[in-house]
Image (cartoon, rainbow, N blue to C red):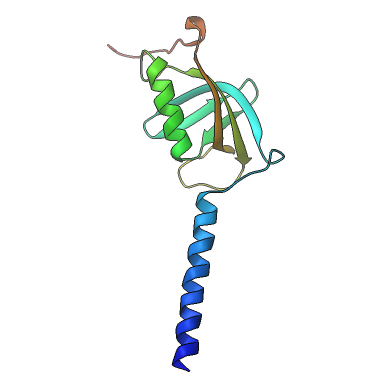
Length: 128
């Protein structure tokens, strides 16, 4: 009886570890991915991509950190927006941090370029 319990315990642990690793390395088919082109800004722990029609909150991931790192290299001020093209999984799932209706999990970063000067104006209040 102890052997059956022990084997069941090991199998349960093995199966749960396997399913956790699958969720970390999720592979999406091209049918599930959407190409999004727009202006990206990351500020105070939140990433946003604004297209001409929608605004997407960007789900926190290693790809978001990678995109922010690439964007930081071409920005002159922290509030500057950069043009991006990404492939991602769009969702409307509820999130405690991201309150936008549309959210995107970045799967692939296709392009990061500087935004034109006329589109990058920020209204500043005070002595900044």
